[in-house]
Image 1 (cartoon, one colour):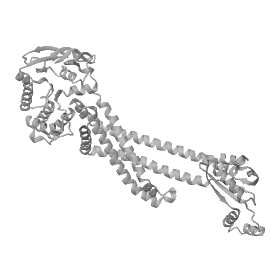
Image 2 (cartoon, one colour; image 1 turned 45 degrees about the vertical axis):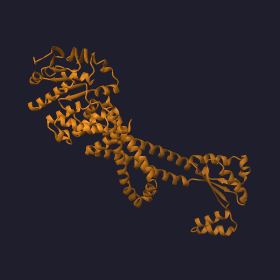
Image 3 (cartoon, chains in turn cyan, brown; image 1 turned 90 degrees about the vertical axis):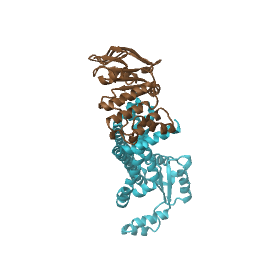
Image 4 (cartoon, one colour; image 1 turned 60 degrees about the vertical axis):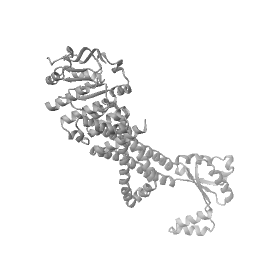
Length: 307
Length: 226
């Protein structure tokens, strides 16, 4: 297509957008609603993932060592565990630190502290907190630790206990809840997105239906399909651009309010999340808006172009 | 130039728009097609523009079967035909200037050609004062003159005027017919459909009479006889 034709199509798109007034703004309103649904879903996914991350963070496997095991041996084991691909991080707590933490935790429990004082020696061993990358990977880490393989030769003799099996039920249930929540979240998001896409497509189809006669006339005077379709696609793109700007402008104060009032409830400061991801969110909804407008226009006009 | 070979158009068995029509229109001719409402006049001209497909038979413009054309070629053919309709078929969202400029853009004319030719053709149909008016701001006569201006701007080989005076008063009717005659004098083939006796008698050229989809008369220097 020559530059002149392209320029004429773009100009016609802008002029039609301006002249159609109310119809254009009605279409923008609907696209704005669709983009708002998508933005809400993006933000809700962020809340969901942040909540799930917080829950996941609370899960770990602790390896308790026998009293008096040397730190070198434990460090050797720690290094071996860290090499496992499933492992995110391993935190070492020495026997003394373990005792300190125990005292802090039981500072109000006088009989326990008194019993501890009477023993004089430290009855607690050191321990390692192992965090997996995914909740589902704890079992394989626990199995690895149980097996006395070459990597950690003789380690079973120094390990007092591994609390995975006590936590197994909770971890398994959590695992199922997380997977379910993600699936449900995705499904709900998909349903909402599909519904809003259909509504937008139908609205744009109606705006084009109004120009059915004009489209026929344009074809009769010898306009090519692209010359007729082009300005409608440009109009569709303008709907997307304007609607995405309005959506971002609406979500700015909305997320600010949520950030100031609902951070504790949501477990995530929505305002800072929105601001720090502003560009990505804008690019996503701008692309969706523009593509939605252009594709809907292009599809809707197709049946009037045939002759 | 235009050949109808045994063309029929049947919508359903009770509704036959054209019944085995065979006729030829030579280049540069002025042909009036007359008949009562529902006689098949509009269907006949729609066949030339390939707005309608025949149920049987063929329509040729020169050596081209218009109903066998691909979309792109049909678009190119339509640029060689100017059309004027009873209901004007103007682009309501565009000004008088833009309506004509659009037809020129569609034909691939340059901006310079558009700037120079549009005012000229508007002057020709006496619409200079209506350049920036939208169709809804114009009278019936003005709209029809604009429609004619759009039809002739690309110097087409054929002008099809489907009941162009149907919505006009006698003064505007006279003006429109005078413009069509002038266009024909310059060598353009004109096909006019009407049921206005005065118009046919004033033109004094070939008249084809349709009745129930059939050609019942074809007179060289015809009068309105039904």
